[in-house]
Image 1 (cartoon, helix red, strand yellow):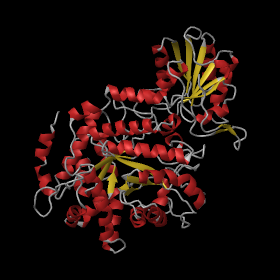
Image 2 (tube, rainbow, N blue to C red):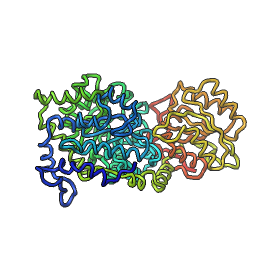
Image 3 (cartoon, rainbow, N blue to C red):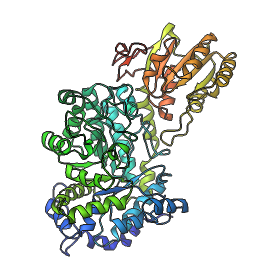
Length: 604
Protein backbone atom coordinates (compact mmCIF):
# COMPACT_ATOMS: atom_id res chain seq x y z
CA UNK A 1 0.00 0.00 0.00
CA UNK A 2 1.33 3.45 -0.85
CA UNK A 3 1.73 5.61 2.23
CA UNK A 4 2.42 9.25 1.62
CA UNK A 5 4.86 11.22 3.73
CA UNK A 6 1.98 13.46 4.83
CA UNK A 7 -0.03 10.49 6.12
CA UNK A 8 2.94 9.20 8.06
CA UNK A 9 3.74 12.59 9.54
CA UNK A 10 0.10 13.01 10.52
CA UNK A 11 0.18 9.59 12.13
CA UNK A 12 3.12 10.75 14.22
CA UNK A 13 1.81 14.19 15.08
CA UNK A 14 2.99 13.45 18.59
CA UNK A 15 6.54 13.27 17.28
CA UNK A 16 6.86 17.04 16.98
CA UNK A 17 5.93 17.45 20.61
CA UNK A 18 8.21 14.57 21.52
CA UNK A 19 11.28 16.17 19.95
CA UNK A 20 10.27 19.50 21.37
CA UNK A 21 12.29 21.09 24.14
CA UNK A 22 10.58 22.47 27.20
CA UNK A 23 7.12 22.16 25.66
CA UNK A 24 7.98 24.70 22.96
CA UNK A 25 7.93 24.14 19.21
CA UNK A 26 9.67 21.21 17.58
CA UNK A 27 13.46 21.43 17.56
CA UNK A 28 14.55 24.28 15.34
CA UNK A 29 17.65 24.13 13.18
CA UNK A 30 20.69 26.31 13.52
CA UNK A 31 20.49 29.25 11.12
CA UNK A 32 23.54 28.52 9.01
CA UNK A 33 24.28 24.82 9.24
CA UNK A 34 20.87 23.19 9.42
CA UNK A 35 22.20 21.22 12.41
CA UNK A 36 20.80 21.26 15.90
CA UNK A 37 23.07 22.83 18.46
CA UNK A 38 24.38 20.89 21.42
CA UNK A 39 22.42 22.96 23.92
CA UNK A 40 19.12 21.75 22.50
CA UNK A 41 20.39 18.19 22.14
CA UNK A 42 21.52 18.21 25.78
CA UNK A 43 18.05 19.41 26.73
CA UNK A 44 16.61 16.36 24.94
CA UNK A 45 18.99 14.08 26.83
CA UNK A 46 18.11 15.66 30.18
CA UNK A 47 14.46 14.62 29.70
CA UNK A 48 15.27 10.94 29.04
CA UNK A 49 14.84 8.26 31.67
CA UNK A 50 17.91 6.15 32.45
CA UNK A 51 16.31 3.21 30.59
CA UNK A 52 15.82 5.37 27.47
CA UNK A 53 19.44 6.48 27.66
CA UNK A 54 20.67 2.90 27.80
CA UNK A 55 18.49 2.01 24.81
CA UNK A 56 19.90 4.87 22.69
CA UNK A 57 23.34 3.21 22.81
CA UNK A 58 22.22 -0.06 21.20
CA UNK A 59 21.97 -0.93 17.49
CA UNK A 60 20.01 -4.16 17.17
CA UNK A 61 18.99 -6.70 14.55
CA UNK A 62 15.34 -7.63 14.23
CA UNK A 63 13.77 -10.24 11.96
CA UNK A 64 11.08 -9.39 9.43
CA UNK A 65 10.19 -7.41 6.33
CA UNK A 66 7.70 -5.28 8.27
CA UNK A 67 7.92 -3.36 11.56
CA UNK A 68 4.53 -4.57 12.75
CA UNK A 69 3.47 -7.56 10.61
CA UNK A 70 6.45 -9.85 9.93
CA UNK A 71 6.03 -13.45 8.77
CA UNK A 72 5.37 -16.03 11.48
CA UNK A 73 8.87 -17.55 11.15
CA UNK A 74 10.35 -14.10 11.82
CA UNK A 75 8.04 -13.55 14.82
CA UNK A 76 9.26 -16.91 16.18
CA UNK A 77 12.92 -15.94 15.64
CA UNK A 78 12.39 -12.57 17.35
CA UNK A 79 10.66 -14.18 20.34
CA UNK A 80 13.44 -16.75 20.68
CA UNK A 81 16.38 -14.33 20.34
CA UNK A 82 15.05 -11.00 21.64
CA UNK A 83 11.80 -11.73 23.50
CA UNK A 84 9.71 -9.47 21.26
CA UNK A 85 7.51 -10.19 18.26
CA UNK A 86 8.62 -7.43 15.88
CA UNK A 87 10.52 -4.16 15.46
CA UNK A 88 7.72 -2.11 17.01
CA UNK A 89 7.83 -4.24 20.19
CA UNK A 90 11.63 -4.06 20.23
CA UNK A 91 11.46 -0.26 20.20
CA UNK A 92 8.73 -0.12 22.85
CA UNK A 93 10.58 -2.47 25.21
CA UNK A 94 14.21 -1.40 24.78
CA UNK A 95 14.02 2.05 23.13
CA UNK A 96 17.04 1.17 20.96
CA UNK A 97 18.67 4.07 19.13
CA UNK A 98 19.58 2.06 16.04
CA UNK A 99 18.49 -0.96 13.97
CA UNK A 100 20.74 -2.87 11.56
CA UNK A 101 19.37 -4.53 8.41
CA UNK A 102 20.47 -7.98 7.20
CA UNK A 103 19.41 -10.10 4.26
CA UNK A 104 19.22 -13.21 6.47
CA UNK A 105 16.91 -11.33 8.86
CA UNK A 106 14.57 -10.77 5.86
CA UNK A 107 14.84 -6.98 6.17
CA UNK A 108 15.91 -6.38 2.57
CA UNK A 109 13.58 -8.06 0.08
CA UNK A 110 13.17 -5.16 -2.34
CA UNK A 111 13.55 -1.36 -2.30
CA UNK A 112 9.86 -0.51 -1.70
CA UNK A 113 9.63 -3.03 1.14
CA UNK A 114 12.84 -1.65 2.69
CA UNK A 115 11.43 1.90 2.54
CA UNK A 116 8.17 0.74 4.13
CA UNK A 117 10.07 -1.11 6.88
CA UNK A 118 12.17 2.00 7.57
CA UNK A 119 9.02 4.14 7.81
CA UNK A 120 7.35 1.60 10.08
CA UNK A 121 10.38 1.59 12.40
CA UNK A 122 10.42 5.41 12.58
CA UNK A 123 6.67 5.55 13.21
CA UNK A 124 6.92 2.97 16.03
CA UNK A 125 9.84 4.77 17.67
CA UNK A 126 8.30 8.23 17.45
CA UNK A 127 5.04 6.94 18.95
CA UNK A 128 6.86 6.25 22.24
CA UNK A 129 6.95 8.84 25.03
CA UNK A 130 9.85 11.20 24.20
CA UNK A 131 10.32 9.07 21.10
CA UNK A 132 13.32 9.71 18.87
CA UNK A 133 13.99 8.68 15.28
CA UNK A 134 16.05 5.53 14.76
CA UNK A 135 19.44 5.48 13.02
CA UNK A 136 19.02 2.60 10.55
CA UNK A 137 22.25 1.00 9.35
CA UNK A 138 23.52 -1.83 7.17
CA UNK A 139 26.72 -3.30 5.71
CA UNK A 140 26.60 -2.15 2.10
CA UNK A 141 30.30 -2.32 1.19
CA UNK A 142 29.50 -3.47 -2.38
CA UNK A 143 31.53 -6.28 -3.93
CA UNK A 144 31.24 -9.39 -1.79
CA UNK A 145 29.47 -7.72 1.18
CA UNK A 146 26.15 -6.05 0.43
CA UNK A 147 22.83 -6.47 2.19
CA UNK A 148 20.64 -4.77 -0.42
CA UNK A 149 20.66 -6.58 -3.75
CA UNK A 150 19.08 -6.05 -7.14
CA UNK A 151 17.30 -3.97 -8.35
CA UNK A 152 19.45 -1.55 -6.33
CA UNK A 153 22.73 -0.57 -8.03
CA UNK A 154 25.67 -2.74 -7.00
CA UNK A 155 29.18 -1.43 -7.51
CA UNK A 156 32.55 -3.16 -7.60
CA UNK A 157 33.95 -3.83 -4.14
CA UNK A 158 36.96 -2.20 -2.52
CA UNK A 159 39.81 -4.23 -4.04
CA UNK A 160 38.30 -3.85 -7.51
CA UNK A 161 38.09 -0.08 -6.99
CA UNK A 162 41.68 -0.22 -5.74
CA UNK A 163 42.64 -1.92 -9.01
CA UNK A 164 40.88 0.84 -10.94
CA UNK A 165 42.88 3.34 -8.93
CA UNK A 166 40.42 6.17 -9.53
CA UNK A 167 39.42 8.18 -6.49
CA UNK A 168 36.75 9.80 -8.66
CA UNK A 169 35.22 6.37 -9.34
CA UNK A 170 35.42 5.48 -5.63
CA UNK A 171 33.68 8.72 -4.72
CA UNK A 172 31.01 8.24 -7.41
CA UNK A 173 30.29 4.71 -6.18
CA UNK A 174 29.92 6.04 -2.63
CA UNK A 175 27.70 8.94 -3.71
CA UNK A 176 25.33 6.80 -5.80
CA UNK A 177 25.33 3.88 -3.34
CA UNK A 178 24.67 6.33 -0.51
CA UNK A 179 21.84 8.09 -2.34
CA UNK A 180 20.11 4.74 -2.93
CA UNK A 181 20.46 3.70 0.73
CA UNK A 182 19.10 7.03 1.93
CA UNK A 183 16.09 6.72 -0.40
CA UNK A 184 15.26 3.44 1.37
CA UNK A 185 15.61 4.97 4.85
CA UNK A 186 19.11 3.65 5.64
CA UNK A 187 21.28 6.52 6.87
CA UNK A 188 24.35 4.81 8.29
CA UNK A 189 26.48 2.53 6.10
CA UNK A 190 29.18 0.35 7.64
CA UNK A 191 31.59 1.15 4.80
CA UNK A 192 34.26 1.76 3.59
CA UNK A 193 36.70 -0.86 4.88
CA UNK A 194 39.88 0.97 5.89
CA UNK A 195 41.95 -2.17 6.56
CA UNK A 196 45.18 -2.54 4.58
CA UNK A 197 45.31 -6.13 3.30
CA UNK A 198 49.00 -6.91 3.70
CA UNK A 199 48.38 -10.61 4.41
CA UNK A 200 47.23 -12.72 1.41
CA UNK A 201 46.01 -15.39 3.86
CA UNK A 202 43.57 -12.96 5.52
CA UNK A 203 40.29 -14.92 5.62
CA UNK A 204 37.95 -12.11 6.68
CA UNK A 205 39.10 -8.96 4.84
CA UNK A 206 40.84 -9.88 1.55
CA UNK A 207 39.02 -8.27 -1.40
CA UNK A 208 36.99 -6.13 1.04
CA UNK A 209 40.17 -4.02 1.35
CA UNK A 210 41.25 -1.45 -1.25
CA UNK A 211 44.73 -3.00 -1.29
CA UNK A 212 48.12 -3.41 0.35
CA UNK A 213 49.55 0.11 -0.03
CA UNK A 214 48.55 2.24 3.01
CA UNK A 215 48.69 5.54 1.11
CA UNK A 216 46.67 4.24 -1.84
CA UNK A 217 44.09 2.76 0.54
CA UNK A 218 43.96 6.07 2.45
CA UNK A 219 43.13 7.96 -0.75
CA UNK A 220 40.34 5.55 -1.70
CA UNK A 221 38.88 5.54 1.82
CA UNK A 222 38.75 9.36 1.91
CA UNK A 223 37.08 9.42 -1.52
CA UNK A 224 34.41 6.92 -0.47
CA UNK A 225 33.75 8.75 2.80
CA UNK A 226 33.17 11.97 0.86
CA UNK A 227 30.95 10.13 -1.63
CA UNK A 228 28.69 8.49 0.95
CA UNK A 229 28.44 11.56 3.13
CA UNK A 230 27.71 13.91 0.22
CA UNK A 231 24.59 11.75 -0.27
CA UNK A 232 23.47 12.29 3.33
CA UNK A 233 24.54 8.89 4.64
CA UNK A 234 26.98 8.41 7.52
CA UNK A 235 30.04 6.49 6.35
CA UNK A 236 31.78 4.14 8.80
CA UNK A 237 35.43 3.24 8.32
CA UNK A 238 36.34 -0.13 9.79
CA UNK A 239 37.90 -2.03 11.55
CA UNK A 240 39.94 0.17 13.90
CA UNK A 241 42.86 -0.08 14.62
CA UNK A 242 43.30 -2.25 11.48
CA UNK A 243 42.29 -5.83 10.60
CA UNK A 244 44.45 -6.26 7.49
CA UNK A 245 47.26 -8.47 8.78
CA UNK A 246 45.58 -11.52 10.28
CA UNK A 247 45.08 -15.18 9.44
CA UNK A 248 42.21 -15.51 11.95
CA UNK A 249 38.61 -14.54 11.25
CA UNK A 250 37.32 -12.55 14.25
CA UNK A 251 33.82 -13.97 13.66
CA UNK A 252 35.13 -17.33 14.87
CA UNK A 253 38.36 -16.60 16.78
CA UNK A 254 40.42 -13.91 18.46
CA UNK A 255 43.07 -12.55 16.06
CA UNK A 256 46.34 -11.15 17.35
CA UNK A 257 48.09 -8.47 15.28
CA UNK A 258 51.83 -8.52 15.96
CA UNK A 259 52.65 -5.13 14.41
CA UNK A 260 54.95 -2.90 16.43
CA UNK A 261 53.65 0.57 17.22
CA UNK A 262 55.85 1.96 14.42
CA UNK A 263 54.49 -0.62 11.94
CA UNK A 264 50.94 0.19 13.00
CA UNK A 265 51.57 3.91 12.42
CA UNK A 266 53.04 3.19 8.98
CA UNK A 267 50.72 0.39 7.75
CA UNK A 268 47.39 0.53 9.55
CA UNK A 269 46.87 4.12 10.66
CA UNK A 270 46.98 6.10 7.35
CA UNK A 271 43.48 5.12 6.07
CA UNK A 272 41.89 5.97 9.44
CA UNK A 273 43.75 9.28 9.57
CA UNK A 274 42.48 9.99 6.03
CA UNK A 275 38.91 9.08 7.00
CA UNK A 276 39.06 11.44 9.99
CA UNK A 277 40.50 14.23 7.81
CA UNK A 278 37.64 13.63 5.34
CA UNK A 279 35.10 14.19 8.15
CA UNK A 280 34.05 10.58 8.75
CA UNK A 281 30.83 10.31 10.77
CA UNK A 282 31.50 6.96 12.43
CA UNK A 283 34.33 4.46 12.97
CA UNK A 284 33.87 0.75 13.74
CA UNK A 285 36.12 -1.13 16.15
CA UNK A 286 37.86 -4.46 15.54
CA UNK A 287 37.72 -7.50 17.80
CA UNK A 288 41.48 -7.97 17.56
CA UNK A 289 44.34 -7.91 20.04
CA UNK A 290 47.24 -5.54 19.27
CA UNK A 291 49.75 -6.05 22.10
CA UNK A 292 51.96 -3.16 20.94
CA UNK A 293 49.04 -0.75 21.40
CA UNK A 294 47.56 -2.38 24.51
CA UNK A 295 49.45 -5.18 26.29
CA UNK A 296 46.44 -6.11 28.49
CA UNK A 297 45.23 -8.84 26.13
CA UNK A 298 41.87 -7.12 25.64
CA UNK A 299 40.29 -6.81 22.17
CA UNK A 300 40.51 -3.31 20.67
CA UNK A 301 36.72 -2.98 21.06
CA UNK A 302 37.19 -3.08 24.84
CA UNK A 303 40.52 -1.21 25.00
CA UNK A 304 40.59 2.26 26.52
CA UNK A 305 44.25 2.79 25.47
CA UNK A 306 43.25 2.11 21.83
CA UNK A 307 39.82 3.76 21.57
CA UNK A 308 40.31 6.72 23.90
CA UNK A 309 44.10 7.01 24.01
CA UNK A 310 44.80 6.57 20.31
CA UNK A 311 41.56 7.15 18.39
CA UNK A 312 40.12 10.00 20.44
CA UNK A 313 43.22 11.67 21.87
CA UNK A 314 46.07 10.98 19.45
CA UNK A 315 44.06 11.00 16.20
CA UNK A 316 41.67 13.69 17.45
CA UNK A 317 38.48 11.89 16.46
CA UNK A 318 35.26 13.02 18.14
CA UNK A 319 32.63 11.30 15.99
CA UNK A 320 30.61 8.18 16.74
CA UNK A 321 32.47 4.96 17.60
CA UNK A 322 30.48 1.79 16.94
CA UNK A 323 31.54 -1.72 17.90
CA UNK A 324 31.72 -4.52 15.38
CA UNK A 325 28.99 -7.07 16.09
CA UNK A 326 29.06 -8.12 19.74
CA UNK A 327 27.96 -11.60 18.69
CA UNK A 328 31.36 -12.31 17.12
CA UNK A 329 33.71 -14.72 18.88
CA UNK A 330 36.64 -12.28 18.91
CA UNK A 331 34.99 -10.04 21.51
CA UNK A 332 33.46 -12.87 23.57
CA UNK A 333 36.61 -14.93 24.15
CA UNK A 334 37.78 -13.20 27.32
CA UNK A 335 34.61 -11.77 28.89
CA UNK A 336 30.96 -12.76 29.25
CA UNK A 337 28.16 -11.13 27.26
CA UNK A 338 27.18 -9.10 30.34
CA UNK A 339 30.66 -7.54 30.73
CA UNK A 340 31.36 -6.78 27.07
CA UNK A 341 28.96 -3.81 26.61
CA UNK A 342 30.02 -2.22 29.90
CA UNK A 343 33.73 -2.55 29.10
CA UNK A 344 33.13 -1.21 25.58
CA UNK A 345 31.51 1.93 27.00
CA UNK A 346 34.34 2.33 29.50
CA UNK A 347 36.81 2.05 26.59
CA UNK A 348 35.13 4.91 24.70
CA UNK A 349 32.49 3.27 22.45
CA UNK A 350 29.22 5.10 21.62
CA UNK A 351 27.11 2.47 19.81
CA UNK A 352 26.85 -1.18 20.90
CA UNK A 353 26.12 -3.26 17.82
CA UNK A 354 24.02 -6.41 17.74
CA UNK A 355 24.67 -8.13 21.08
CA UNK A 356 23.78 -11.84 21.03
CA UNK A 357 21.30 -11.36 23.91
CA UNK A 358 19.93 -7.84 24.11
CA UNK A 359 18.30 -8.32 27.52
CA UNK A 360 21.63 -9.40 29.04
CA UNK A 361 23.58 -6.52 27.48
CA UNK A 362 20.92 -3.85 28.13
CA UNK A 363 20.46 -4.84 31.76
CA UNK A 364 24.22 -5.05 32.31
CA UNK A 365 24.64 -1.41 31.22
CA UNK A 366 21.65 -0.35 33.32
CA UNK A 367 23.07 -2.10 36.41
CA UNK A 368 26.56 -0.69 35.77
CA UNK A 369 25.11 2.83 36.01
CA UNK A 370 22.94 2.03 39.03
CA UNK A 371 25.93 0.39 40.75
CA UNK A 372 28.27 3.27 40.00
CA UNK A 373 30.65 1.47 37.60
CA UNK A 374 29.45 3.75 34.78
CA UNK A 375 28.22 7.29 35.33
CA UNK A 376 25.12 8.69 33.70
CA UNK A 377 27.35 11.51 32.43
CA UNK A 378 29.39 8.89 30.51
CA UNK A 379 26.21 7.67 28.81
CA UNK A 380 25.20 11.28 28.04
CA UNK A 381 28.52 11.84 26.27
CA UNK A 382 27.84 8.97 23.83
CA UNK A 383 24.15 9.82 23.41
CA UNK A 384 25.14 13.38 22.48
CA UNK A 385 27.41 12.03 19.72
CA UNK A 386 24.62 9.76 18.43
CA UNK A 387 22.07 12.61 18.52
CA UNK A 388 24.48 14.97 16.75
CA UNK A 389 24.73 12.39 13.99
CA UNK A 390 20.95 11.91 13.81
CA UNK A 391 20.56 15.69 13.59
CA UNK A 392 23.24 16.01 10.90
CA UNK A 393 21.53 13.33 8.82
CA UNK A 394 18.20 15.18 9.02
CA UNK A 395 16.47 12.48 11.06
CA UNK A 396 15.19 14.89 13.70
CA UNK A 397 13.62 17.02 11.00
CA UNK A 398 12.08 14.31 8.79
CA UNK A 399 12.92 10.62 9.25
CA UNK A 400 10.55 9.33 6.56
CA UNK A 401 11.07 8.27 2.96
CA UNK A 402 8.62 7.77 0.09
CA UNK A 403 8.06 5.10 -2.52
CA UNK A 404 8.26 7.82 -5.17
CA UNK A 405 11.69 8.74 -3.82
CA UNK A 406 12.74 5.09 -4.18
CA UNK A 407 11.57 5.02 -7.80
CA UNK A 408 13.42 8.23 -8.61
CA UNK A 409 16.75 7.04 -7.18
CA UNK A 410 17.17 3.28 -6.68
CA UNK A 411 18.58 1.24 -9.57
CA UNK A 412 17.85 3.89 -12.20
CA UNK A 413 19.50 3.46 -15.64
CA UNK A 414 22.11 6.21 -15.13
CA UNK A 415 23.26 4.56 -11.88
CA UNK A 416 23.48 1.10 -13.47
CA UNK A 417 25.48 2.54 -16.40
CA UNK A 418 27.87 4.24 -13.97
CA UNK A 419 28.43 0.90 -12.20
CA UNK A 420 29.17 -0.84 -15.52
CA UNK A 421 31.64 1.85 -16.58
CA UNK A 422 33.43 1.81 -13.24
CA UNK A 423 33.63 -2.01 -13.26
CA UNK A 424 35.25 -2.01 -16.71
CA UNK A 425 38.06 0.15 -15.33
CA UNK A 426 38.81 -2.39 -12.57
CA UNK A 427 39.33 -5.65 -14.52
CA UNK A 428 43.03 -6.54 -14.44
CA UNK A 429 44.87 -8.53 -17.11
CA UNK A 430 47.56 -10.49 -15.25
CA UNK A 431 48.83 -12.86 -17.97
CA UNK A 432 48.43 -12.85 -21.77
CA UNK A 433 51.04 -15.16 -23.30
CA UNK A 434 51.07 -15.22 -27.07
CA UNK A 435 48.37 -12.56 -27.27
CA UNK A 436 45.52 -15.03 -26.67
CA UNK A 437 43.31 -12.17 -25.52
CA UNK A 438 41.20 -10.47 -26.61
CA UNK A 439 39.23 -13.50 -27.79
CA UNK A 440 37.78 -13.05 -31.24
CA UNK A 441 34.38 -14.40 -32.29
CA UNK A 442 35.90 -15.27 -35.65
CA UNK A 443 38.54 -17.63 -34.24
CA UNK A 444 37.07 -18.64 -30.87
CA UNK A 445 33.32 -18.48 -31.32
CA UNK A 446 32.36 -21.48 -29.15
CA UNK A 447 33.38 -21.17 -25.51
CA UNK A 448 32.97 -23.62 -22.64
CA UNK A 449 32.47 -21.82 -19.32
CA UNK A 450 33.40 -23.82 -16.21
CA UNK A 451 34.33 -22.96 -12.66
CA UNK A 452 33.29 -22.22 -9.14
CA UNK A 453 29.80 -20.98 -8.35
CA UNK A 454 29.89 -19.57 -4.81
CA UNK A 455 26.57 -18.26 -3.55
CA UNK A 456 25.67 -14.79 -4.79
CA UNK A 457 27.42 -12.32 -2.49
CA UNK A 458 24.89 -9.53 -2.71
CA UNK A 459 21.53 -10.48 -4.07
CA UNK A 460 22.78 -10.41 -7.65
CA UNK A 461 21.46 -13.01 -10.04
CA UNK A 462 24.36 -15.44 -10.29
CA UNK A 463 25.61 -18.11 -10.36
CA UNK A 464 28.92 -16.83 -11.81
CA UNK A 465 29.26 -19.42 -14.60
CA UNK A 466 25.73 -18.58 -15.81
CA UNK A 467 26.44 -14.83 -15.72
CA UNK A 468 29.69 -15.32 -17.66
CA UNK A 469 27.96 -17.54 -20.24
CA UNK A 470 25.13 -15.05 -20.73
CA UNK A 471 27.58 -12.15 -21.12
CA UNK A 472 29.54 -14.08 -23.79
CA UNK A 473 26.32 -14.96 -25.62
CA UNK A 474 25.29 -11.32 -25.60
CA UNK A 475 28.56 -10.45 -27.36
CA UNK A 476 27.96 -13.01 -30.13
CA UNK A 477 29.84 -16.04 -28.79
CA UNK A 478 28.28 -19.48 -28.42
CA UNK A 479 28.65 -20.37 -24.75
CA UNK A 480 28.15 -23.71 -22.98
CA UNK A 481 28.05 -23.57 -19.19
CA UNK A 482 29.16 -26.32 -16.80
CA UNK A 483 29.40 -25.53 -13.08
CA UNK A 484 32.36 -27.40 -11.56
CA UNK A 485 32.36 -25.94 -8.03
CA UNK A 486 35.13 -24.88 -5.66
CA UNK A 487 36.28 -28.50 -5.16
CA UNK A 488 35.59 -30.39 -8.42
CA UNK A 489 35.48 -34.19 -8.16
CA UNK A 490 37.20 -36.59 -10.59
CA UNK A 491 33.85 -37.20 -12.29
CA UNK A 492 33.20 -33.45 -12.70
CA UNK A 493 36.70 -32.89 -14.06
CA UNK A 494 36.21 -35.73 -16.57
CA UNK A 495 32.90 -34.20 -17.70
CA UNK A 496 34.56 -30.78 -18.19
CA UNK A 497 37.44 -32.31 -20.18
CA UNK A 498 34.95 -34.15 -22.42
CA UNK A 499 32.94 -30.93 -22.94
CA UNK A 500 36.12 -29.06 -23.89
CA UNK A 501 36.82 -31.33 -26.86
CA UNK A 502 34.31 -29.67 -29.15
CA UNK A 503 34.87 -25.96 -28.38
CA UNK A 504 37.25 -23.23 -29.55
CA UNK A 505 38.20 -21.98 -26.06
CA UNK A 506 37.55 -22.57 -22.37
CA UNK A 507 36.85 -19.89 -19.74
CA UNK A 508 37.36 -21.07 -16.16
CA UNK A 509 36.36 -19.06 -13.10
CA UNK A 510 38.77 -19.74 -10.22
CA UNK A 511 37.91 -19.11 -6.57
CA UNK A 512 40.53 -18.93 -3.79
CA UNK A 513 42.77 -21.64 -5.26
CA UNK A 514 45.19 -23.27 -2.80
CA UNK A 515 48.05 -25.70 -3.36
CA UNK A 516 45.77 -28.61 -2.43
CA UNK A 517 42.73 -27.43 -4.41
CA UNK A 518 41.24 -29.74 -7.03
CA UNK A 519 40.56 -26.56 -9.05
CA UNK A 520 44.24 -26.86 -10.01
CA UNK A 521 43.67 -30.38 -11.31
CA UNK A 522 40.67 -29.17 -13.33
CA UNK A 523 42.63 -26.34 -14.98
CA UNK A 524 45.69 -28.52 -15.71
CA UNK A 525 43.53 -31.24 -17.31
CA UNK A 526 41.78 -28.61 -19.43
CA UNK A 527 45.18 -27.24 -20.52
CA UNK A 528 46.21 -30.77 -21.49
CA UNK A 529 43.36 -30.89 -24.04
CA UNK A 530 45.26 -28.31 -26.10
CA UNK A 531 42.28 -25.96 -26.11
CA UNK A 532 43.07 -22.31 -25.30
CA UNK A 533 42.21 -21.76 -21.62
CA UNK A 534 41.41 -18.34 -20.19
CA UNK A 535 41.17 -18.11 -16.38
CA UNK A 536 39.31 -15.46 -14.41
CA UNK A 537 39.98 -15.05 -10.68
CA UNK A 538 36.51 -14.28 -9.35
CA UNK A 539 37.66 -13.43 -5.82
CA UNK A 540 41.31 -13.28 -4.73
CA UNK A 541 43.82 -12.33 -7.43
CA UNK A 542 46.35 -14.56 -5.64
CA UNK A 543 44.90 -17.55 -7.59
CA UNK A 544 47.20 -16.79 -10.53
CA UNK A 545 50.25 -17.94 -8.54
CA UNK A 546 48.80 -21.44 -8.20
CA UNK A 547 48.22 -21.86 -11.95
CA UNK A 548 51.47 -20.83 -13.69
CA UNK A 549 50.72 -22.63 -16.98
CA UNK A 550 47.56 -20.66 -17.83
CA UNK A 551 48.29 -18.44 -20.85
CA UNK A 552 45.64 -15.79 -20.16
CA UNK A 553 44.54 -14.76 -16.67
CA UNK A 554 42.24 -11.93 -15.59
CA UNK A 555 41.24 -10.74 -12.11
CA UNK A 556 37.69 -9.52 -11.35
CA UNK A 557 38.03 -9.31 -7.52
CA UNK A 558 34.42 -10.40 -6.99
CA UNK A 559 31.72 -12.60 -8.47
CA UNK A 560 29.00 -9.95 -8.54
CA UNK A 561 27.28 -9.61 -11.91
CA UNK A 562 28.60 -6.11 -12.57
CA UNK A 563 32.22 -7.26 -12.27
CA UNK A 564 31.79 -10.53 -14.18
CA UNK A 565 30.07 -8.81 -17.12
CA UNK A 566 32.82 -6.18 -17.22
CA UNK A 567 35.49 -8.91 -17.25
CA UNK A 568 33.80 -10.57 -20.25
CA UNK A 569 33.74 -7.23 -22.13
CA UNK A 570 37.47 -6.94 -21.47
CA UNK A 571 38.33 -10.50 -22.52
CA UNK A 572 36.28 -10.03 -25.71
CA UNK A 573 38.05 -6.76 -26.52
CA UNK A 574 34.95 -4.60 -26.05
CA UNK A 575 36.82 -2.74 -23.30
CA UNK A 576 40.54 -2.31 -22.70
CA UNK A 577 42.09 -3.80 -19.57
CA UNK A 578 43.21 -0.86 -17.44
CA UNK A 579 43.08 -2.28 -13.90
CA UNK A 580 46.33 -2.73 -11.96
CA UNK A 581 47.01 -5.02 -9.00
CA UNK A 582 46.44 -3.17 -5.69
CA UNK A 583 48.15 -6.04 -3.83
CA UNK A 584 51.32 -7.99 -4.62
CA UNK A 585 50.98 -11.63 -5.69
CA UNK A 586 53.69 -13.84 -4.20
CA UNK A 587 55.08 -16.99 -5.79
CA UNK A 588 53.19 -20.09 -4.65
CA UNK A 589 56.35 -22.07 -3.85
CA UNK A 590 58.40 -19.11 -2.54
CA UNK A 591 56.00 -16.79 -0.66
CA UNK A 592 58.78 -14.33 0.17
CA UNK A 593 59.29 -13.64 -3.54
CA UNK A 594 56.89 -11.42 -5.49
CA UNK A 595 55.52 -12.84 -8.74
CA UNK A 596 53.49 -9.76 -9.72
CA UNK A 597 54.04 -6.48 -7.87
CA UNK A 598 51.51 -3.81 -6.91
CA UNK A 599 50.76 -1.90 -10.12
CA UNK A 600 51.08 -4.91 -12.44
CA UNK A 601 48.49 -4.96 -15.19
CA UNK A 602 48.86 -5.70 -18.90
CA UNK A 603 47.26 -3.82 -21.80
CA UNK A 604 46.19 -4.93 -25.29
